[in-house]
Image 1: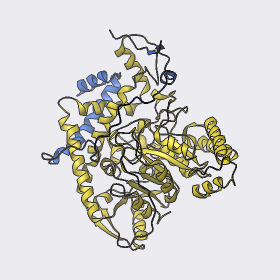
Image 2: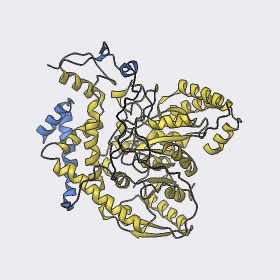
Image 3: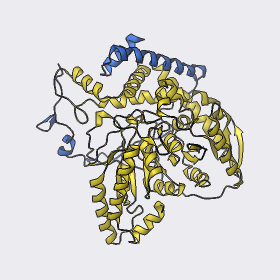
Length: 464
Length: 91
């Protein structure tokens, strides 16, 4: 049963939501035992929510997400449920408020089953920079689930119950795990979903999005969580209902040829099979060019680490998060807490970002990257005048083994994001479509113009 | 470079061991070198994009709104006294 059929049945009173939630929580524990996908399973609050929803349903209230189990990436604040963002420095942090997206989910009758594992603050492509546990690929435990929303990818694939995941992307953190785990993953236009209550990685890049087994479920969830929020200064002041339409006549799609360089053979084969499937829908697919793709990794990382280094400055052991005895001067105290609390990749990014913003280098790195971002945005917009969407593989490789990831240098790690950071820099929407290979899944990446989510979901619906 | 990384780590309140300092210096040098490829692009006449889309400021009415209660605000720290956060010695 998919989420849509399930919600209908719950609203009709055909399912006892408390019993169902109990069995979902048992399943989550079993899946987590083998795949390490949850940082916290919210057992107590999920059952309380289920009882509350049962009451609302008994009063004949119709709920758009009635009783639907939803997992939440751990960087999104959940009132009363531990929220760590995958970092030791927030190991015991319990938010006193809900993120806007959580308020919307609760109002719609969804049940928060737990908080999913992720790279610390979203700093990673493979979910290996985790302070607690490293999620395992749902199809082969020796391989990565992708990052940084790795736990969300795992539970979306493994859930044997109706489920939708709320994840977050800064530079590809929804697309990468969706590709490696074989699920659909939508990163919406920047500003479409409120960031209020999201623990920031890089404010000008962060977007809350959705992972699910089908495009229909993503459509359902996007319509619930999108919309203007006055508490988020970058929230878009628009109201739009997204709808999948299977009308493709006259549609033209571009494949930027630069995106097919240095691609794993099985990724390439699955990509071309997907192209054939699109062509069968009367869609014209042709090669195009995006010459700036060579520069996207550098521009992205300069901006992302610069913003991250300022965002993490507030974590110092005083008001919340990891702390210590108040001994010594403030320099000594803050340094002790931060050194204990941040993992290696977080430290590297703080130092790199501080360097890029430092007097004497700001113009060379930070401002330069911001200007290159303008060029990248302009080039995408030019392409969208000609094409309804752009496509490429999502990741250049299939999910690697953990032992292969260990051998990568930080720079090689960053270069794995070459196909996902461009659209994230531009803030345009993107959708991963799962593709089969002979071994692990690959992904088709569909990029669209601002607010063209329904076009992406319509194209994705050709596949599921 | 090593001196720069040492200075930055100190100002970022991160203590690095000598071994970490050497490792980070090497890694960060090679990452910064790769960033220099951005210089190949002419951006003289280009405005920076601090956000992906152009947006206007959103203002709300200057009215007091409900915030966190005192209990909620202090719930995540042991360092508190008389409804104040207690911090380390400043001088």
